[in-house]
Image (cartoon, rainbow, N blue to C red):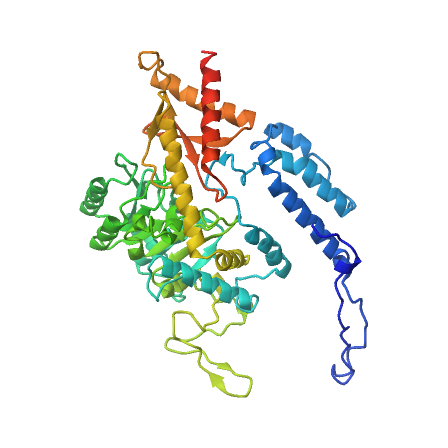
Length: 547
């Protein structure tokens, strides 16, 4: 790191002259102010200190425990302090992060972390977060974030094109996949009821019609769909949880039978949901077949691609998502396999104009002209002429206000970090990273198959490897009952977590506890997988010696 001397001080540049009395109408006196606002004094030194702290954290990940040793009660005690009456020096805050935060933080970027879909974030996206905060743009409105709006529109266009959506498609960034899934189901409700928020004169509610709507999803789906039906005023029973097949994809026969039964009962099937990479196993539903079913029964087709969507970047594995381009809406989550820091999600919608109508409001204070049906907005070119916006592509050239395209009002410029990262890295490098993660998960499965007392469960489709520990005697017979093995698998995960050598999770598959390793780290190599297998083997042997 470069020395922080006087040569690094910013050149303040020329001072701005105060307006003359004539320019202000004689109302405002000249009032010279400081060249630099008081709160920005030392900004450069503060920035260097934070950069040093970030580099220290990232470079120290492999020498730190993956999981902190303190209990929730211990952590509460660690951070117990009264509300400060006076501020403390910035150097003390830096030291607080070093002494209290770092040791008690999950080392998500570590090559020994195999937990949820939390990646090691790209450095360019880490530092873009500071830039985003400094500019503090509110991308709810075009007026408050002109460049930010254009960047988000461009990122959305990239994503729509990647997934093969038509030029009429559009979308919006969200804080994550959950909000994207909720938005997708809201659009399904609107289509089924033939209504949207732009119908300002329609003050009648949906009445009993909404109670007739039914939604269909695999039992392996993300919990956000349970939240979605509740938030949308639907009954939990209106979300049909369909059984899965032997590799944890939705059972297509059972799905169609459920739709036909609901039609016979006088209900209205509204939405078929496909999963492109389940959280449990990474399984991908047969999206092309689901698209056909959705069209046949006049349903909205939503795809949750929060985890597996990045596979579309790869020519080698992109075919796994065959049919995703037929979706009416797609949930994406770049803070997973695009290696973005939290938060960075989004929803892509086949009919972008329908997305806008579904969330269209006109607050008086946003100063936007409300167009009548058939009216085209024009604007001045600064020389007294009126100009019609460029209509070459959907919403290109328009003053897009993203608060009119989704649930959120105030919004961060989350598209900035993704825009910078994609430009910095390029599709080919992203594809190579995704392919390597998939191959490392398969390498993990191959190594675990060599362990006589471990059994692979699930398809190993993406970057997830599921397996179960089932101790055997010298003759190869199971030593314990299924219930006892459930507890042993939980004990194994907890022992590894407690020792801090690695971190992975456990889940339930087919009613039994299974261990779950997720590979989502562009820095990981085969040697890191070999090390994890050794950690698991050692923990299993230690537990077994006490039985």
